[in-house]
Figure 1: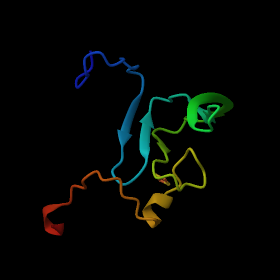
Figure 2 (figure 1 turned 90 degrees about the vertical axis):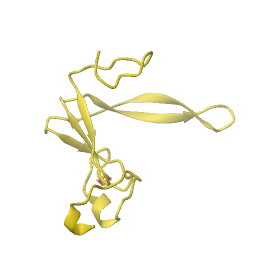
Figure 3 (figure 1 turned 180 degrees about the vertical axis):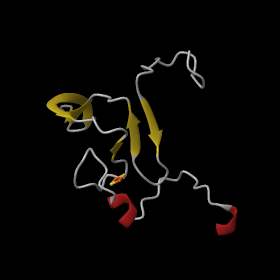
Figure 4 (figure 1 turned 45 degrees about the vertical axis):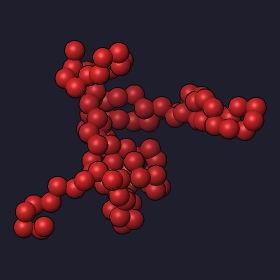
Amino acid sequence: MPQNHEEGAPVLSTEYHVDINAQGPYLVYGKMPVKLQVITPNHEGNSWTFRVGKKDYRTDQQPVALCRCGASKNKPYCDRTHASMRFRDGIPIELPDEEI
Ligand code: FES
């Protein structure tokens, strides 16, 4: 069982690894399949379920950077727009002592 695994939570494949890049993208390792999913509404018009789309996204490059800020013009991939928009995710940034 992987470390930091909460009892009762599903165990995911160890083939893949995802790092969260502070103030930036998800970095995905292991050629994880990435497929388009579309949120579909219920009869009241509220977001309800995901429908799996037909489009697959390439993950040959290692790691593949997936957008986390929502501003990429090449979703699901990161195009570095997060840097120009100064995306802040609330994850504390560790600065070297000389910058504090
Ligand atoms: S995280 Fe890089 S463009 Fe969104």
